[in-house]
View 1 (tube, rainbow, N blue to C red):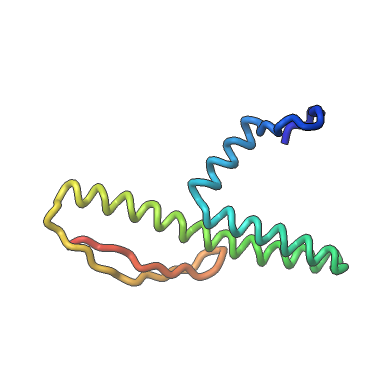
View 2: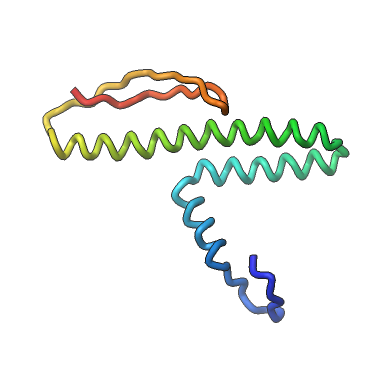
Length: 117
């Protein structure tokens, strides 16, 4: 947020950096929802009196879930782009689904990959 004081009643103007954050969140709605959930959960746990060790564990778990969500969003975005390009190149191909699973730092990622034949 802007650190400058603003007169009462004046609308809040987001900085360029905040506008970039908003753009990213709009392009990745799943990520925005997960970040909001992380902040809410953390605030509730801190208000409940958690210690530093518990706070760290909680944040690590939440960030791992965020990473899984981001990988899933990445998959959806890249898959959609690849399907659109393939369909342009060969419009007579038909879509089929293939289940994939792999392991990452963030946990197990499972997807239904769209394959054109």
